[in-house]
Length: 370
Ligand code: SF4
Image (cartoon, helix red, strand yellow):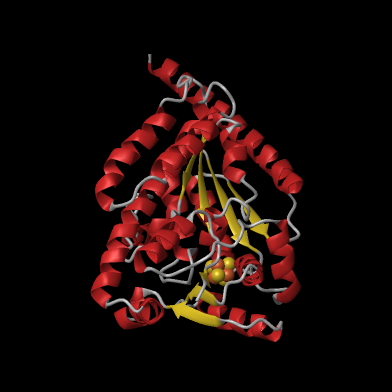
């Protein structure tokens, strides 16, 4: 058996480590690319969302490299993600590929639906699977913590590209982690590399929250590397989703720092129930960032994404009520980097102009008080 799973940001760190611990042979499909997307878009229904197209492209690339077992996550709706594994299985079978599909349901659908397929494919006891999960998770969480620091650092770097360079070195450091006991030491070393980037902390920066659908937020190819583009243009970033927060069973979101319960509470005057994916969280995060004094919000989601389309209809009211500008980007295989960059440049101009006006108002007010 040679297994493969789809790409999504650095989820391969968590899944690869887990499969190694469980003794499952696997191959990593190439990172998401134009080729992956073209392959996926060729076989996927036109109106399916971008993650499905990239998953299919990943699986085709993996099958052509020799994989015979595809591992895919299940879901509990109400968005289409819950049907992905079965749809992908049928599309690939119709295209003539021969393989087994293993669907791992989320723990919220029942512990045995989650662990049963892993047991079947690995032949390991539940106790051993549980131990492997507990050992793999802290390593992946360290990568998330590093990524979070990079988003906050790049806007202050003196030499353009210095943060990205330090980040790459830090990734090498984290890849040496072989067990949970080593996480703290290597994480400290990796964070120190990024913290050591020469910075100008007096520089005026824009504070922007990036919210939206999990796949687009987590995968740099899918989001057109928007975070690096913004960071080198003096934008301090916070992102609403991290891999281990998204996949973690507790919903406490330790990396992002805002629990799902808190987000739902924040959003309740606008949206009072779960709508699938990150729809509710996108509304909650917008309010959270507005309350923290952020200058603007960037909302990213795939074309035809149901939960984020709901959020998009609500967010203009949130933006008006809390006086925070929001820009929306709907992404599919037709989206071009240049078009996104042009709209982002205009958005940043607007945010700078508002920031300057607000600073002037504050100055006038403080003089009046004197
Ligand atoms: S959240 Fe949206 S884009 Fe993601 S799987 Fe669901 S419908 Fe598709």
